[in-house]
Image 1 (tube, rainbow, N blue to C red):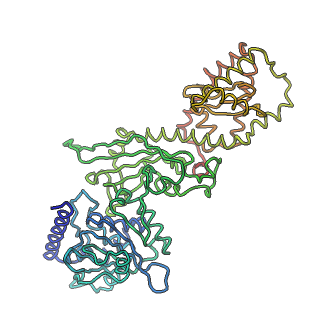
Image 2: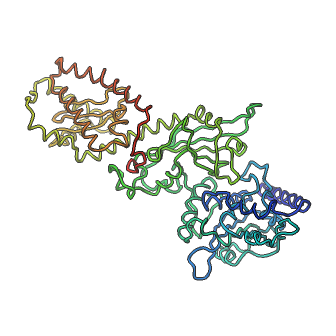
Image 3: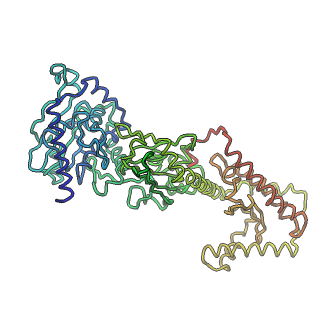
Length: 594
């Protein structure tokens, strides 16, 4: 027998066993009206997460497609009903009734799929509407219908001798708006499948009551939640295809991956076995992915080179990243929650920490380690899990590395943006008229040094670009025309935080992006053009004094030794110590740091 047929047979057999137990024990709703009203307030994060409970059932029932369809009253542009339709194995007629009884699921001990307590369908439905109808059929049988109506329960219509019983199922086709949709898609009649209809929508709970807004929200959210399933089980919402969206932006073909030329970088991941504390046997696995985004990743193309862009300069990736600011947790490949790590381990900044992402996909066998909620939309990782992620997956070390790279990239963008109007150079030129000392003479040793510096720079750039040194040197000379000063960056771990050199006819101030001076002070997210210009002027003052000195003089040797052996290491030490001190920063939430 084929795998699909075996799965269907096992599912239908489990349904029959459950129905038999309910026939013996009674078809009541456990505790009645108060229980139902309490379930309405179970607290789903959004309509999308409530609907995910229904989609979980569809996927686990072997569906190969799922459609979300809106129903409307005449003349209204707002959905009056929402139907979730699938072509799964379906349910036998009594199971349609059982599907609306809390705790009457067939998958309580099943950890291969999504099921947990058997609360999903009724809880999710009454959280969004006052009436839910379930229609289902198995191959060779007619459609069966059952329903749950909160208002009827409150009015006592379901009460019999102090017990609340669910109405018996009846044979009935799905509503007309569902059949019309299926006919247009050439899918009617269905061999098997299930339709869940939310009626009497609660407009205070359903997100974005207007058609377009609700559709867009569901398409966006479901694309993220089910990104690992949408290729095998395509979905539509109000006729619009749900595109899979990877919030790590690492999957080619997924939504926003090719939004522009920027690409996220995947760092080495990890697969970690979690063992039983007593037996040491493997209970389940954690699969960890890492992603680093370039500093311009969330900007529109025209704003990628600007300094301090506004909210209007941001692209469609930003809302996805902001909704996943923390550690992303999946259960069996289905997204559940985004969690901020304990402050004892790490603190997350809403702005600068959107440039990295970490995903942890855990097996359902590890539910106890994550305090999984009934609604499957929140996890609370145990201290043991955090320790495993820290020690074995090195997630916090990886975050520190990615944050460091981002700081360098952001600072470079800021420096390049200011290059067009370098305030420090303008100030130097303006102050030149007040200079009292004579400029240095072009001695043979100074001319030789400047010429060697030019050739060395041409050689370095030629090697990186794979072109001739002569062509690069000509280009450098041309760029120097009319530009006697320039500020550039270099990446030299362990080197001085700055240096200044005469390069042909141009004097160049070089800032080392590998030094904390650059990442923590000059190029920090809280820096400003005026602060950077002021710091450049300070370094120009020191650099000019060094370069103005004769190459072989004691004065030159003094500046070189102090810069390399004293100022730079001492500055690195104090700035590193400053990182450990809590400093009030009003700009932490400033979007302009993006």
